[in-house]
Image 1 (tube, rainbow, N blue to C red):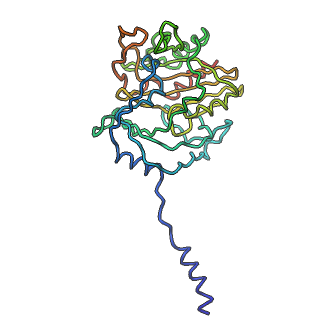
Image 2 (image 1 turned 180 degrees about the horizontal axis):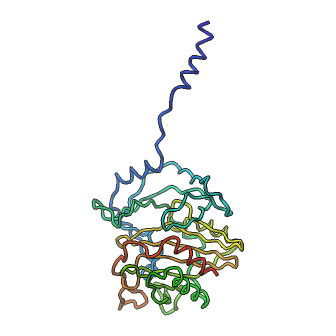
Image 3 (image 1 turned 90 degrees about the vertical axis):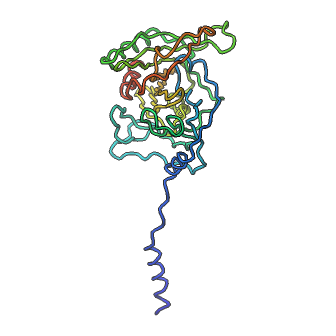
Length: 325
């Protein structure tokens, strides 16, 4: 009788035992990253376009506030929210948006593993702008096809942007939309190779900006959006909206980088005809630049600008939908 009861008793004992909790991989990595924060200078040269109007991709050249993270296991995918059903192809439902956030689902792509963190402020000092530690992932391959800001913006597109700024943010002071041709670093006599259009956006006496550029892509808009989904060193997939005509709106999380804490947020719009529009809200504007006598086409950046972005996610998304037509 004892021999018959022993296996059952062992099974009952094992079933009653609770395995030790497994720590959240990302939380543990960030905790270790904060403990091991070190001022490591990355001597990455910024592109000329960054000096003029700045892109979120420029945050890849981060200053001493960047520290490497130790290896970690792959992060879990973002769970879908049962309260927000997915109605957009190639996306997953997102949690309810916070104040000023757009209610779009995230692209149905696996999250990336952070490789470094941006710590707002010098080592040993309080964070700047009350920003949390920002996880950063690997930038896209330099060999990838990224044709952004390679064309002049048509007049009707510029007109739609000017009209949208007046309609969406009537309570904010909006400056003129100025065209910025960008010459290559070497051989300026060859003429500009890219073009940007930037308008100052002033809130409570502090100036930021909104930049427009026009590019191109090949193939299907959704496939192109997938290929560029992590262009801003974001670790979570971007938010996404797909129109019935196939136009894809892709909104990245905000980014921070030098000097000090310069903030940007990028919205890319992929049209079925292969046209790519990029809108970037930035925490700096024309008052933060000064003429450069040695290189007239590359003004000097003087200050980081505003402590926050001049536009909310919702405002940026509404302006982008108007620009798309």
